Length: 344
Image (cartoon, rainbow, N blue to C red; front, side, top):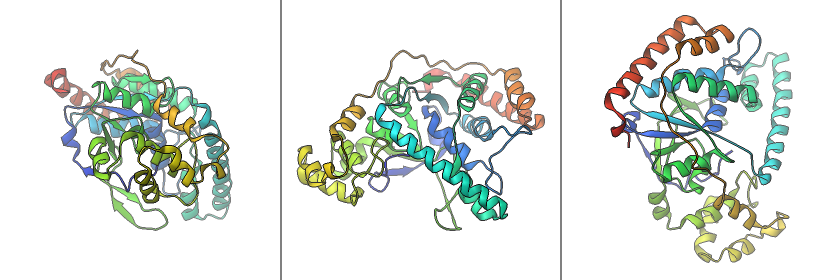
């Protein structure tokens, strides 16, 4: 879902070339969901093979990240582990919405209503264990390392950036900022344009960098105050936040009471909306489990494994796979020539 803080955060547009020589930690689940949602046919249906197995996630990882590797960027994917107990209610809510969207999609399909098919199809997205495992398999064959987080992937990715093992987190969501990532890159693997919600228009989408320290200084709050602000407007652990409080109102409350957080939540009437203490979310975000038992090792390309997965199992065009493999090999050679010393 992501914390709705974009209007408050200071973002700077950048070109992908500016990230050359950097290692970026990718929030894997967030990125795979994005591919499943955006890489679709004209009627909104995802890419599939002849057996009806969805392949949009594989297309996104293989093609779009090869294009980014050509820019001289390196990646490490970070996968979610066990979700926190507080998140299970939110997952059930999302599941219910997806099932309702599936019903509406089927109704639109029967009526051959292409516009509504496109509208509801993207809302039906499920990320299955098979998709996750195949994504890991493809990444390994591409020589891209991945890390298994103990719990939330964005928290682990933020930890890796804070340790200096990566330059920034790559995610569409702002959640990793709550975990203290110094830098967040958004819109990196989105191509060109994005449809504007509630309209038929499109807008240009460019990569952007959010610097946590600059953002906090810009709005005049601390890291702990940012977490409190996020809880007020809604997180994955309290969807929707406190009714009637948006980012700007939350910012005023936080600034008014400074670090007297009890006063913040008392004025916000937290107990009228939730049957648990706000401190549970605050402590969860502050103490999210992470691990330092990981190794970032950039491997070799295994063409046979890539072709077996994409061409043999999922019927990708062999010609297109070969063309992308050529790009991938050229990108790997370029990175090898520059050497690891340039990547930090």
